[in-house]
Image (cartoon, rainbow, N blue to C red):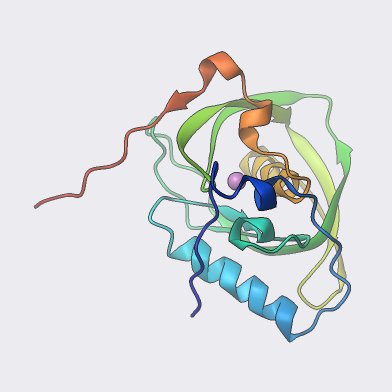
Length: 177
Ligand code: NI
């Protein structure tokens, strides 16, 4: 178990904004980053559904996604997302149809805003063993993949969100009962 600090704006702008490098070795170092990403995601105080390597300080093309589903600010329940590792991911197809939905990011504390993204995508990547994988998906999973892959290019959701609709979210008070 190795829980890492999640880098945040504005302090960690430099790493969060850098372009990540391809992973060439699927060695122990890479496996350690993958397990650190899952550990950090799971122990985050705020609900997160995915994490990219730059968010824990590595400018490498590694993304992890996993979620048991949670209740959003608006009361909607999010989809359950399977445990997914994407190394060197490349989105090779986007649907022309787009969908708008509120997004947040563990690296951009307490801000949410609507982002319009293609509804369906096709992503090619490698898994944690270097094996080629291809995922065709839509809906929430497609959105999360796009958000995480953006991190590898130094792009954050606030760059894509409608600026006048960005809003602060209230920190949840600890339940005193
Ligand atoms: Ni994010």
